[in-house]
Image 1 (cartoon, rainbow, N blue to C red):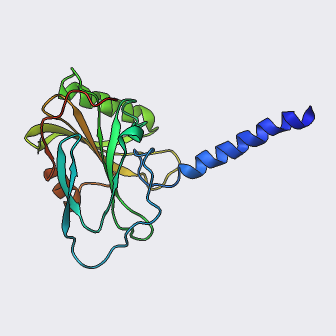
Image 2: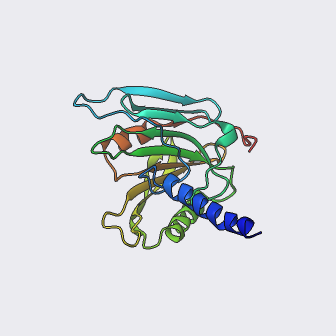
Length: 213
């Protein structure tokens, strides 16, 4: 009987170790469910060429640097436990080449069609992120240039987690497709030329109102 009693805490400790290890596989503060590829490209001195990514399901097309790793997410496993909602679907991730063991992630999530205004939805996203990260520092919130002809809001922040000397910076952009489908773009760095190019290249066509999620 005593042996059975000891099994439970041992299994619990093993499970906690697995969870802690898996949570350290990415340096992207708001991409906890993103599975990082086992190998990432290495930065080179040559300037990037650009490739085209297309997602027929969500009628999305965009450009990304050819030295970045593209990771499509299967619809059956797309549900993303993001800070800003339980119904978001992570459809694609892009990973930059590693530099000194670090990399940047560009992710796109979509949500179910909403009756909220873009401003209200963005405020809900901002509030959820602030609640999720203790000590979060909001650098800037602003109405940005259009994405694919639609207005977009941008949140720039650092996680500001207690005990961290180098808080992780991040950007979240939110826009609506033509059928009030929210698109949430996350970037695990501050604004730079690559981010600007990728965001401005996004084209979104009319999306069916339901995606079977």
